[in-house]
Length: 497
Image 1: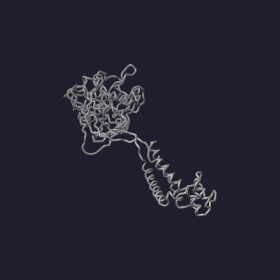
Image 2: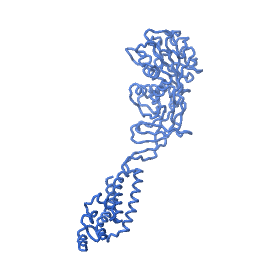
Image 3: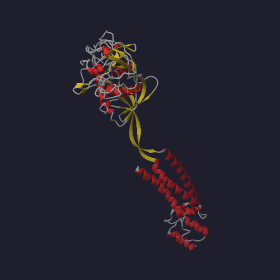
Image 4: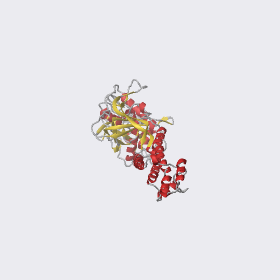
């Protein structure tokens, strides 16, 4: 930039100014010829090297000024403008250079790669860890998402810290939870393959728990609990534990989920409990448990309801932009260019990614809590529930707030799948990831000379006017006729006059 500035001023300023100085220096002789005499400090007023702008402006407005001087003075003013516009018109700035490339994008084929009855549970367990890291520890995992309620398959993790911008084609999953309270059919004993389960919203469901050895007859559990449910028709080979506790659903088999729905059972006593560690289900549709939830519970003492959540998801093609570790998607219409989100994979994400996150027990005061921190954040008005007695019990959050929190927390738990994670029951230490190639445009920032449009336009106008005036000036005055204000010409003039 320094070299260009020097060249600019040398050519555009110094050369032109030399011409104008010649014209100003010869103005005294033209005045002497017009008046027939030399008047000191009047004839030479604009020809001296010490002449300032005040003298030049005064002379410009007088009748004595010649046409070459007037044109030259206008050119001088334009040069002043040019000196100001020149550095502003051309600057050094960062620009993006686009280059076609190929990238590796996550392929969400987790349901196709299960080769062991327990492998789908590995993804749910991984989702639990990520959810707790982000929602409880206020930390961050993997890529950031710029838009709410959008699931975007990831690129390779080594691009998280990349300084460049990458645009690539991928499928994306938009969602917006709609949860509603449902009254379940009378609860039966825990079921295994081939047995009937609970009827909720005309569909058969089964309860599942991550902590099968927990006694459901425990006083706190009987007072209030939250459950996770999955449709029973997704169950194939794995038996449900004989003593389910507070999570309901299917742990998995070598089959994908057939529905994106998820649900949570809320259970409380239908009598007042003095210590206040109960759920207050007033105003929510409930039913009395007709049979036991477990061997040591009294079903007639439990009031139950179910929160059923539909993610209302849609898979769309999109152009995804990665910049500074953040992903954003520009959704498009039409068929998908990259089919990396099968519908059954989306069903699995929404129905199972919160499976362990809402069921993992947390140690507290020498025991294990029943309703964990994620459940309290998701559903309850008081996060101190179970630890602090609350007169009148704790109410669930309003449905619109539950929907909002489900949308937020699922963005964390779904990260276990968005990386293309491929569970391997025989290798926990080094996870594998399923990736596919996708066309992309890489943008690399480089330093370059750039111009500002308004300044460039003004600069071109000034230069054009200046060129026209200089051509006119040169055409009117011949250089060999100019008698500049130097000693030789002064002596000659004094002899004449």
